[in-house]
Image (cartoon, rainbow, N blue to C red; front, side, top):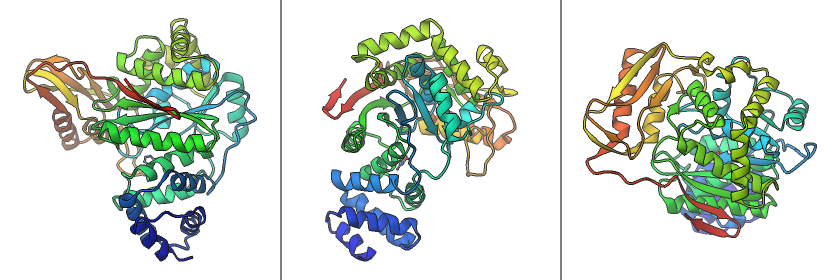
Length: 443
Ligand code: URA
């Protein structure tokens, strides 16, 4: 077999066999096939696509390229949740304890962020002492005893995806549905969950800008999960504005705590209830979404979800008193209000711009080596649909050591992110569709 022939076959619209996909991925992993040939193949896939069988084979090949976690020592149906990435998305912080309180074990491996704000691990590290590193045995023990653990990806999970994703990032081949679907699902399959709930973001701040593309991505991922024996559902949720009000690591933990307390922002609470309900249904703890929702609300109302978070924080070495007193979490020294220049109604808040503004203040990483400041970020004051007068505060920058020029740049980005309309803006849907193996339900 020769890579050049397989590139040509895909370029001309052909279908690659399991063996051909294995040849490319294994050859690339071992360094036998060079970057330029895999780049050309990825571009051919970008234009020609892949069918469901090819996408499934690519997923399996990448899942098998490194360690595969066996979660079977943990009792119960292990349900994983994955978001395709959004600004202000702190749903894992809320869902891990909330779903665990309802009896579904959450053994979650999360990532750090590059660009925008930090990832879930960075957010959790805002809690003093919180450790995201532990060996497999302790991970299993914690999930067995408490029901939840969130740790960093240890070991060598999907190295082929890591290498291919880095290459796609610099060859304009990220935005391909089969490549994204196989990349995401390979990590979920290797991480060992029995069932998977996907939160596919749609809108200006998401990979997929249109609802149709987001649904197509969700269907590709649900197909892969279903074919590989993992019960998989996808929720399509809005990313035409950040989720909640806080963007930045400690700010997001504070908002997560408020949500576990029942006092969080409506949009964040709603997305968590929708995703959490799907997790409970797949985890066999509720017969339908309605029952699941009332179970989740009962755990918020009686304080057991927040208690579960404290237990998880303590078990991972964190200071659980900070969960009771969120004011003791890292806090910035300076607060700069960004004011509206014109009156009207907020039409959209470009999530990506807000993410970049938070990164400029130090909340996210510009490079892998950047050290992030857990305290800084952006607290939005108003959201889509709200009325605004000239001079009203749109958002507050939480600043520590960022240079004057970076602060000015962040301020300009926040101003730019807010699109103000002269006309009232009707309420926007938060969730657009549910995709399951049985089809698509649009809301
Ligand atoms: N996230 C991933 O893990 N992979 C992609 O290809 C895109 C987003």
